[in-house]
Image (cartoon, rainbow, N blue to C red; front, side):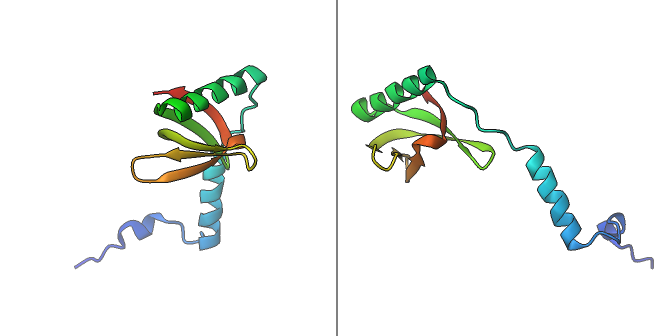
Length: 109
């Protein structure tokens, strides 16, 4: 009976684990995006929407930029810390602390 090596035969024998990790890192870096620069009008609009969520308990969607990738969070702003520059966002099951400088967009839900 012939025993096949399965998927192992399709992997090059000369690739070491370090090479595979390097190729994976290069692939991940390809999809990273630069942080957008917000102008004064966009920052003002973000501030207005955040304060509406805080004052009227409205649900908003906050887009943040972290390490080259964009993440969306939906919730209600529970607190704004101007001194430390954080926004605290209440989600269904957790509270998230978001740095104000990481925010790239805010939308009303």
